Image 1: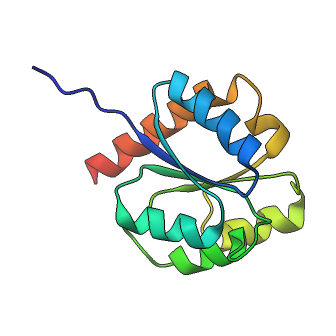
Image 2: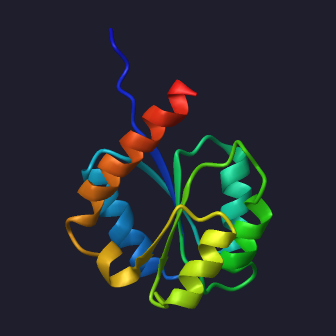
Length: 133
């Protein structure tokens, strides 16, 4: 019997409504989804299991998104991080990418219905590349 492979996505956002919407949409798109309410909890959850992708808010209590990215910097085993933020500007994009973020997406776009499908293709492509290395 062939085992179904489901990519695992960790959503790190202090806004519970955003986490719930993303969790629902990503689950319906076939992802296995987990959540964390701040960067500190997100780092602990990330280190406690295997995750294929992290969706990360920038502005959070405890450990913000930039600190989260800095903590992962240089960790070759860390999954790709897609930053989702309402502060989608050139300065934040440049800083997030300098710290290792794979993408920065405006939160409005991330909450749209088509985002989960686009993310599915992106994650599948990224996982295929990682598996072939």
